[in-house]
Amino acid sequence: MRKVSPDLENAEAPENHKYTMPEGVAWEAVYEDVLKYQAFMAHGVIYGREGKYEPTDDEENPKSKYWFKAISNFTLEIIQHIENDRAPSRLIRLENLDHRIRTVDVPTSCFTSVSRFKDEIGKFGNYRFWGRTDQFEALMGITMDQMGDGRLIDVLGWQKEGFFAFNNCAVNSSVIEYDERGCFEYKGVQYYVPSANEIYEDDDNKFLAQKLLVCKETDVTFEQFSAQILRVFGPQSIHAILYGIATLYADHILKSFTQWPLLFFFGEKSTGKSTLAAAIQGIYGNPAMQEITLTGNATTEKAEIRKFAEFRNIIIRLEEYQNTLKDDKVEYLKRISDRRGYSAGTITGRFATTYTPIHCGAIVTGNHYPINKSLLSRLIVSEWEKPAGANPYTDQQESDFQEILEWNEEGFSGIVQELLMLRKAFEKQFTKCIPAARKDIKNALKDVKVDIDGRMINNMTILLAVHDAVSDSLKLPFNRKDVIDISTKVLKRQAKRMSKSGPVATFWECFIQSIPNMIGETEFIIQENHLFFYMGAVHTAYMKQHFNIYREPGIDQYSLQDQLKNDPSYVGRVSKRIGGNKSSAMQFDITKLPHEDMRRIIMKFKLFTPSYTHESDEKESDEAF
Image (cartoon, rainbow, N blue to C red; front, side):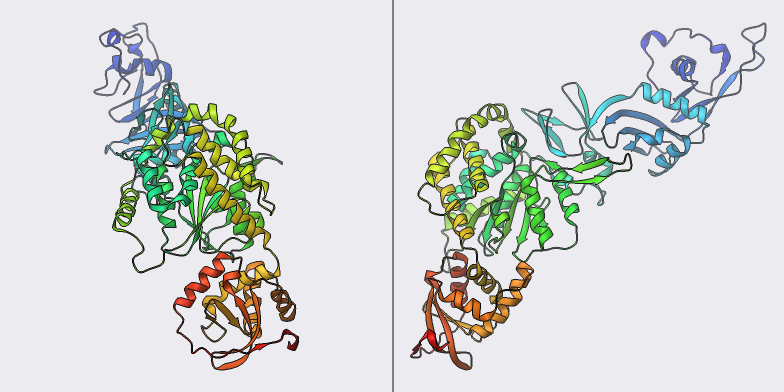
């Protein structure tokens, strides 16, 4: 029932002689709605007008009066009209006679007819309407005239209006709490966050990812966080820290760049790379949020891209990268970097389309070093190795690492507010910092003999410019030289990888990936940093793996053999016993391989290979083969 203004409460309302009111309903409380709409809400239901008014000479005693009957078992409030270009809706509140309350957003189309309205509200439980069309129109008049306007926030994260929307509150210089319906006001505008509506709290089919993006108060400052990360993970975490900052400002950065780098953590298991990825993602919410396994086949590329459209300026983790991924998965990663969403046709017009954008950054992890040149140019690769020895970490290092695990568990996304305080200063400084950052990155590479892709230089320029834009207002545990040094090191490594493409490079890549499937000591052996194998046996594994990776056959055995003889690591031919056979084997000095992952994997294999009785190996001439 609408509240009555004090000056009307005891006033003698006009035209009350025309209406017979339901028992217990005071004319003074509802007459404004009656006169304007011929309907009102009271006693937990909606009343619609019935009958007709037939006057007599005696105004107080007409022949017949209008009267009202209940046309629903609920009351309705349209809280706000939610503006949305693709799917405008309205946030409504329903309360039935059993006092069951539902606050839901429904499409505006359900208010165009009685049948659509009944179908829509019936979805939410025991909410029934049996009024006529004219009574329905009267109800629409009452509710819509009191309706407010608002904006839907269906993409959490940074909002162009100047705040960051979590699922439990909005953050800028202060924290703005939502009400139980997911509504809040900012600078005089009403906003609605559907995923924060309490009716979806226990619904396991709705907004699962959004519910994890929560702001958690923390005593951890960004200074403490970044210092701890650097202390535990070392200089290779510098890019991760800067990437965590940069992603929050990505919408502004992309005004100056056409692509967004992906951070790639490459290394074997138990090196801490996933823990660091979770910590950097944890700036924006629960570390478990939106962890996508690239080797899974359950979803399509479009479905996975939609996950990057559900949020803006946050980090999503992509796990288990492999060079054997299908082409569409590699294309998916490139789309994320290029911010290329996808378009789909609609029924509204011959050329009408809807576009699903990409708003998020990504940290990719895997134990395969990417060999696709086009993809590699879009990555910033951090290489991880497990320290040697049974107890490679000090007690303090273990303690520091455990503290990061605890932060990940408890959550520390409240530090977003600290970073948001720098936004205005960042926007003023970032563009100015780009020329010097690009120049200094290039100068640091002037002695590099291989060509470095322009995209890769842009990737490092972004992170160095981010450092320069925030360094005066945010205390970082590293300086500008540290950023340039690690950036140069990474660029040199990546450029070296890219320059080593060709039959020999692809052979070693295939060989590495075939090791788990080859029987130790029967196809190859390692002795004193030398690798021996029979070309015929290894070539079979190479051909199979080459097709898995590149979707085409590798080169024939004799052509490959000729190519390998020109590799700097090639030593020659020897008569060698491998397994139960002794025959002519190719010998390579693995310390001369340019492929760091090759050396690492083979050395690891060597640790688990039984020692061999060292035979006198007789060198043979290549001419014999």
